[in-house]
Image (cartoon, rainbow, N blue to C red; front, top):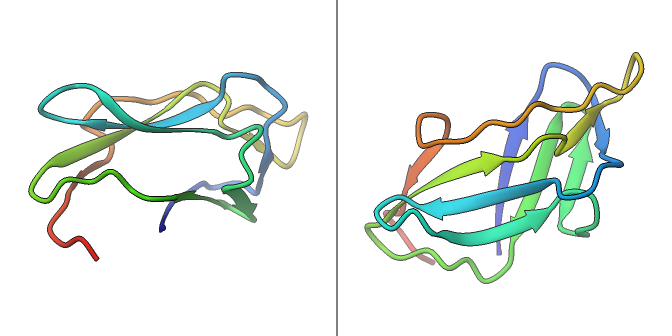
Amino acid sequence: MEALNFIATLPLRRTTLNSTDITIIQLDTGLPVYQIDCKYSPDVYFLNTTLVFFVKNPPWILGKTYYITLSQGVATANQYCGLEADSFGGKIYSEEKIYNIY
């Protein structure tokens, strides 16, 4: 199991929206290798300003590069009227090359 996280500027809480996914995509194929639903998954945690998610049995391939996309509303700000997180995607934002597999 591997833990990954994102840090926000405001405290977060679980979203109430449907279809709010974090997707990990293999760069050379453009195909998703892992997807997790932020509304329903017990493997997604909101700890103050940090969103943490666990990848059980990660499908990483040594030497391959992956990027992460977040769909609209993966988290909700825990103040004001509960602003929903905007989406972001593309290899510019979070690109990870797998060097070690334990």
